[in-house]
Image (cartoon, rainbow, N blue to C red; front, side):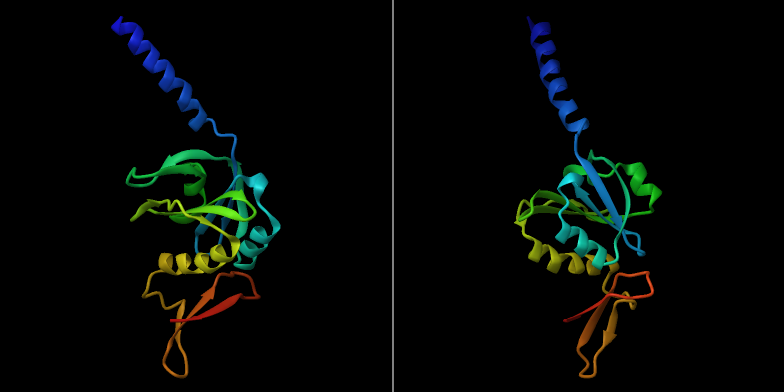
Length: 176
């Protein structure tokens, strides 16, 4: 009797695991010149406003393929993202994960090897995503990164977000 019960448990566990392992989600990897990435899935749901915004921030499409379930560096959370070999191939250590639920709602995660995988359960709209991606990139860069900080005439700290490796730079100025 115990062996039948054990077999049933393995069948139940085995039948749910392939669902997570064999995702039908395709991801799109965007990468900038600083080796930061943005992974968006499902790729088929990427809408023009999001794609245009990521391009505006000078993120280029680098890779796409089947999303895999991965845990954070501290095994604290898991979500679909690019495979580890793709991450290593593009030398990406820190990245943002965007799961598109609809054109009006997205879930956002942040992967940093030091912090692990952060997955807030809040759904965000595009306007909030546009405000928070530059903030997250600044956190990735660190407070002492001179590339992004300059002083203004009245000695307020300015943050120049230059996301471009192209001749025409996109600079967004934020007052702290």
